[in-house]
Amino acid sequence: MNIIFLGPPGAGKGTQSKRLEARYGIAQISTGDMLRAEVKAGSEIGQEAKTLMDAGRLVPDSMIVSMLEKRIQQPDCAKGFILDGFPRTVGQAEALDEVLARLKSQIDVVLVLQVDEDALADRIAGRFSCAKCGASYNDVSKPTKVPDTCDVCGSHDFVRRADDNRETVASRLASYRKETMPLLPYYEKKVKVAFIDGMAPIEDVSSQIDTIMQEVEQITQK
Image (cartoon, rainbow, N blue to C red):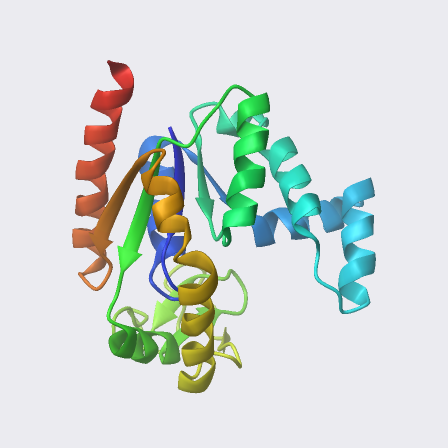
């Protein structure tokens, strides 16, 4: 099953994508991680992307889509994939559709995490992660079990993103409404678009997603 996760920054797309990956064996694909992997591997497209980034320029959509086409043909995507953070615009969605058509594939469901923007700002302002293994935490909703100690690797070093503040969050939410929200009517004409209460506890959000997954599986198996 091929899934797109939509939702504003900090809505929990990454957390729920990883949970889906673990439960269903569907590969989570983050375009940021994919880009870094290509750069690290020193591939031709990775070298080109690095040159652009080193010059302070954005990597064009065409390059991202090209990398994505290569990525979704890897063995770990045999059961499907989860796109987290892509597409962000209708133009990117159209380019993705062209790739999937060539591969005789399609998006099966779009999961949309809905949130209260004020509460989301509080959530984002409280985020931090382990500097060693990258495990994510939150001051309010997901603190470490032992103070100042990573649950996963035991490290005591943590980092916070400089842009995790209310002013930056407001700007990112405005960009999401302007650029990404138009994807909803675009996909509603094509596939099932399911809306999820992203403010619910993590386990409840996962339960909502499981119910939707079961519904989509029944449809696709007919």
